[in-house]
Amino acid sequence: MKKYTALLCLLLAPAVFLAAKDPDRESYRSPYSVKFSFDEKDLIGDLMKGTRSNWKDYASVPHAEWYNPNNRTRWGYWGPAATHFNPPSGLASKSPDWSRERIIATGLRYVGYSYQHHHVPDWEPPADWPVSKDQTTPVGKGLDCSNYTAFVYNLALGIKPTGDVRKQSELTEVPGPGPNRTLPVRRIELPKTYEDFEKTLLTGDLLFINNSSGNISHVVLWVGKIGRSPDGVPLILDSTGTGSVDANQTAIPDGIYLRPFTPRTWYFRQASHILRIIPDGVKPASR
Image (cartoon, rainbow, N blue to C red; front, top):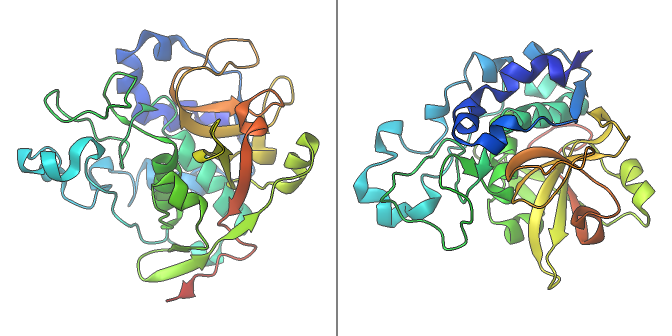
């Protein structure tokens, strides 16, 4: 059994540059961890050193074109779109639990990245590039909530949901694994009680959250049984702004972090529904 804290340097490697620029991010120490049931090389070896390890290959255009001034108007602050990855080698022989844990292990590699309206995490627009009017944090590398969940599923399994949070919440099927295939998406209604969330949701499920107007505005990855918290609270993994605190009552920075799912958080109070992309058997359906 490999514990997330043992993987810390590997999983956080892409975020070192960001942390060095942000004192709050650099000093924050999360009380939360993840304990995987698979060896890290088996789970994400290809992300650490292999076919999926080069972040410059993650966009649909070559890295040399990322900051071409001719794309300023075309892309705006979103930057280049993500490429659609092929399924990882051997996916057809892997168990659903492996796929679910790979989702979280992939997502943890971006812990420390900030909240940004981007399609790929390492897009870092120049100072003269357009900026979203809704951007409340310094511009840098990062993802917003639904582009984060879309990117993680894509990089991990070659399953590519839309990055639009409202459209993502309405999916009945999703492209992948790999191009020219589709996979059905199962909608699951909310459990009746807080305690039932742990019984109903599975690792890697998407939990959608409403805003104060009752409209879908956020999505998180459910960590599930592999999460570890000092007070036993279930964990989610998402990209969001500031405002949440951890078990030590320490403010969690904006961006991608493990966060607690408690009865007091908006994750529970304003939850809408769940989408399950990873079925009992990961068998892609033909178009």
